[in-house]
Length: 351
Image (cartoon, rainbow, N blue to C red):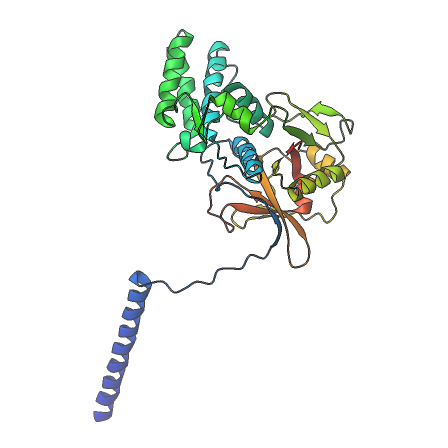
């Protein structure tokens, strides 16, 4: 009997220790200072990295083309020593104002959409100018899908353009914010938005380039993608030449606006990489995947650098516009062959 009591006492004592250990562990886990976590080292070695403005978040919008093209313009000025950060929301507002008129007058046949290509941004800047990011930006990423629906709804209750413009402006003021002052002030100078746009981007500063076999190489043609709403022409060059142009541009301190396919299994935003299983990429393979619609025009990003891994495999560093919640704080590493296969078009500085 005495031995049984002794065993029971020892067991209870051990149970108290176990409960005490569990209790302390829970306190440490729930409200104590977390233990230092090991941050995975970046497996890529940077060869070229251009300056850029902070990563932005396009939110619920299809404005990647505007974010990427503006980022390209910003980088090219930063590399020259200029401080430039431009407003995507201003461009979106001007685009929606124009689209609402066309939608109303066409009785809904010209639908309102925020899709486009990098070259569309240049057209919009030429027509409406641009303002700095600090002059006009929504506090939270605007939901442009909702805004488009509200504008289309507004057209149903008007019978003239004056009333339409007022209703559209009310929607845009509420959803994005009130328009900035009439003039842009920069470094002690005063500009209209159009004058400011011309100071940061010449009309002929960027060239559109692509690489597909169904048109003559060395000539320009209207690229047959749904987002080419302005029917812009693209210089058609062999893919090897295009890859050389991209690489040389980055080496020379000029960013590249890249438009291509991101719906592939090898593209992972969370992991921050894009890979392809194809070891060799040819002009014929590019054409085959484009014609079979395996390569689609999905997304636009800014290319700002070059890198390689420990095995010497080459990558392009891209600045995305999906926020900073991925492995590389919003940046992506696109393998050389991924870019070679999945590029729809690029927009390069002619300088």
